[in-house]
Length: 256
Image (cartoon, rainbow, N blue to C red; front, side, top):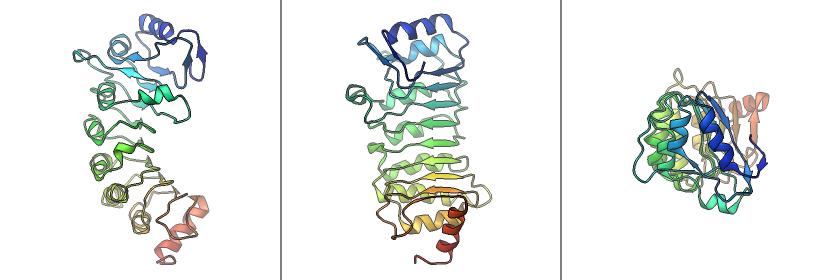
């Protein structure tokens, strides 16, 4: 269903909820509708499709019951991808996810492994910390203004031993980025699983980069494009041989 335009998104979702009780994967990313009603009731979706493991819903809005949820949530949920793109729809962006939305979507989701909330302007660190999963491996929190605080470190500490792929691009708070990177470095070389790190446009410091390269032995790709706090000559994306060269030069003190 993703990337389509349809006369009535609401009718389509209603049919899915009525006839697909065993649904495990739902991809409705970037669906546009001619109808005015395009939001999805989280409670109805959880009641109708309780076995959902993968939910991909980029640029889709959700509603939460004001009377409190009576559902068990998506107890089998492994992947939740609900990013917003600033160029998709102004009306959609203005109704972006709140903490209540994320809390309800991840209710009892202890097996969650992937979380993508890029561009979620209203989500705070509190909603992240409340997620019941302790082993998230893929985390994308780029371009989330309310996460540009040092409190974001609490979420990074919670998942520091399981994170493999992290995107914290466009976080312009040096204190926030520094504290998050510190939590990744303090895991220890033997327990660190980090392989890919997206830092484009962030307030990452050179000292933090050096610490990451030293303390995260499995790290193999890092994006440092548009990072103003870094020395000239290293503000680009690295992988493969380029990454190995960067690591060697940084640890040898070339940019000190």
